[in-house]
Amino acid sequence: MNDETDPSRPIFLKPGHNAGDLVESSKWKVLKEEYGLVEVDVHLPEHLLNPRKQLFGGFTGTYVDMISIYTVRTLFKTQEEFNWSATVNMRIDYFAPVLGPRFLLRGELIKDGRSTCLVSTHFTDLEGNKLVYAITTLRKSS
Image (cartoon, rainbow, N blue to C red):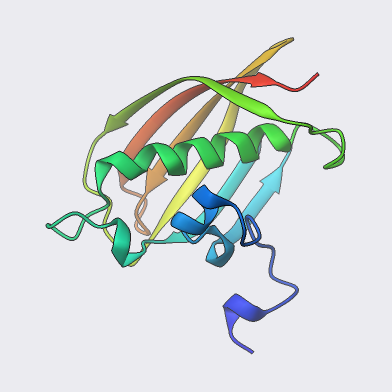
């Protein structure tokens, strides 16, 4: 059995979600998930590359949005308590190109407010070099 079909391996999102299918999130490996923190090992699909074989910058927001929402989801004890979350603001800073075949994503809660959350997302290569940093404000479900 390979790593991608191991039923005990936590996956990020099951197939069937448009954005998740685009970035092939069902193949991601969840490294850590706890209250306000998510770390994921991600592969870089070929169809998301620019002509220089780097992550096309326009797709970066998809990764940020998914990690931010996943991070907010950790604030709820059950999936049923987490009804929805809407992104209301996102800022992305690019430090270096995101290259494959793999990279790491880390979502971290900065502030849990009454109706909104502030989440940071870090993209690093496997050696720990910072590639992208993002801040996202999300409206929480009530």
